[in-house]
Image (cartoon, rainbow, N blue to C red; front, side, top):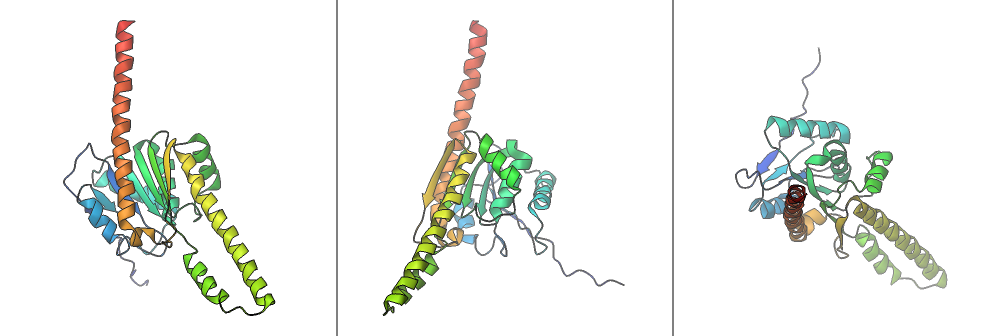
Length: 252
């Protein structure tokens, strides 16, 4: 006889005004070892006053990106939550957002990637192909980078002040060199994501650590606003292009 499972079903939340098919649904992809709450609560409050927001929880079973994406797509279908979607991902959630792009690219209207790009979990071949093809086209993409090393930097600064011998100072110089190299590599990985779209922008917040979603919710909300505005502009441009093609066909 097997004991009953203690695993609870993930509790998803749909927030915001009533459904508006013209406005994309925002989907949250949280990081590893966390849930959407409480880390995303302030951002949810800011965004749900204007937009529909889905806090999708992966739950304690922590499925892999492909499995979680299948679950999310099924949930969207079951709950009758049609595209377009704006994806917001933090940290390890980036692998899930990128997998969602891979499986349902036509449903994605834009994305905000926060402290992602270094997390792993995404098939390297898929990652490379997405960047090479610029899979988002002209769909808006915002890449936000915090300062994952801010704690180490402060610790090193404080410790360095205690150095008295030349040997101690040299040791600290080596640590700074390694820290700068790590910071440069982190920046490279974050900026590499800009290749996903021809319409992308990059924001660095040097005085904030890894938890940008929690600690700089207002900044993230502003980037979502930029993405939403650009989605509207792209739609207008697309409509005009289609109209121009129709008129051209009529005239010729």
